[in-house]
Image (cartoon, rainbow, N blue to C red; front, side):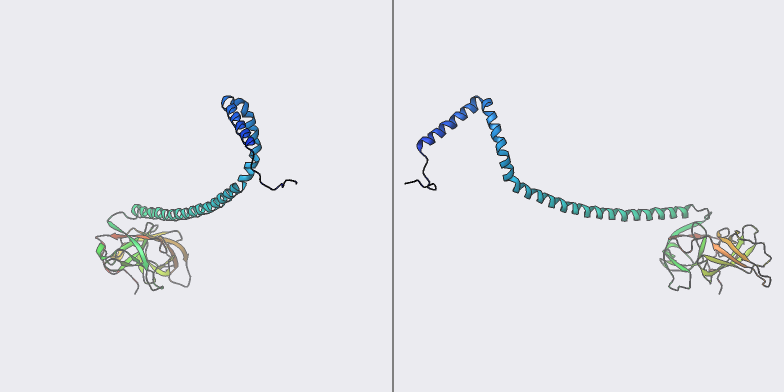
Length: 285
């Protein structure tokens, strides 16, 4: 009867004894003569390495994929954080630029050669009149700052206008360009006196009642004359830009560009002067 190949027979005791003796001999040689066993161990290690690598490949692949996914998510988070920091830095830079520009404007107001005497007060423009046909601005200084009707308002370039209404913490200022505003001026070159009035255009004034024969030409600078005690004398109003003379007309048409920045600017200067009569400003009624 042939033996069954799939039958399990217990190992013989002789084989077990031989295996134990062989292990003891190998351990003895490894302990007493490791240089003899080391080459065989290296050969076995080299033979087992492919098996180890193949067995660990699934685990290593899963860790690598997990690391790649984690790195991409981390990069996304870092990118988002850096974009947020960049946006904050840009906002801060814009604010610093505005503060720098405002500091320059304030220094210009303080150092302007227009202010030669008397006390002054720096104010901020906080609004404009609701009537679009009027050129009136509102400043954040009022009776609590000892402001009064008729005080001169200017910037670092020239005269802007006069205070027409005073409230506890604010005031209304009529600009030179308002159609109801006019003031007495003097030409720097000739000393001739005249009247400059508003046109309703922030960038244009007009000189009224000047004879066609008057010695006036483009480029002439115009200053306050001090007449009427509404504006102190010697403050720049503007520059003559165009002169038109008509043979049939009695008066010339003269355009003046205001020196002050009537259409812009955030800060103004209010002048205090003992010689200035604090009354209603000179205006065409």
